[in-house]
Length: 208
Ligand code: AMP
Image 1 (cartoon, rainbow, N blue to C red):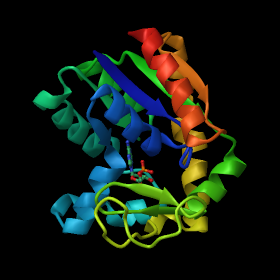
Image 2: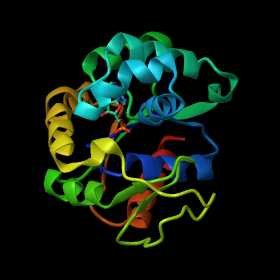
Image 3: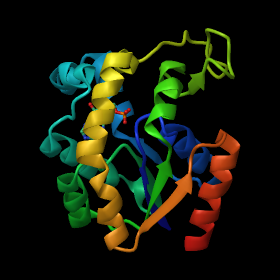
Image 4: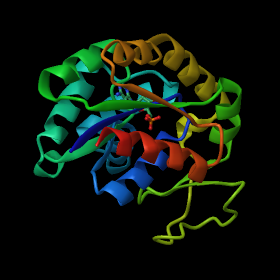
């Protein structure tokens, strides 16, 4: 049983690490960003509601996001644990989460702001959920499903700067929030994917 929250700036590697944790520990990976993007792609009412907000690099309102996550965590596949990636992003969301689920640990993937800009610029996505980086993958199709890779609209540099500003202002305070509850575990995310994952596993195994 492990209810895990992943913290870290945009581009710190939350999604990549979440996918690896999912594989190794068999926990569902819940990314609010992925859920919003899927809704935007499919043109659902939720997608229409959030598209402009996300394209500007701002945050979707807490009430809407909290309701979505509350619903998702009530699904049977979350009963033995979960990985939350991109939620909570504000103190209000973290407080709301305490009302319906007990977080076991918040793993903060620490990376300098300057480093994440380069990481995000080279990031490529697939609609199946895979993510790549141009420095390690030079094909234009997904290795898993063959679909054409794309760059997220909000990965453009001016939007990235706004997302980093929003992170510093609204999400960074969560580090203290979880530290105060003795739930914070910080790992150095500046190394490669595998090196970071080793540190993440140590943290998870230490808590089990
Ligand atoms: P991400 O894929 O986690 O970088 O999220 C992409 C975008 O979705 C963010 O820049 C926000 O606009 C929105 N978003 C994702 N998660 C949240 C959240 N927990 N609260 C508010 N907005 C969110």
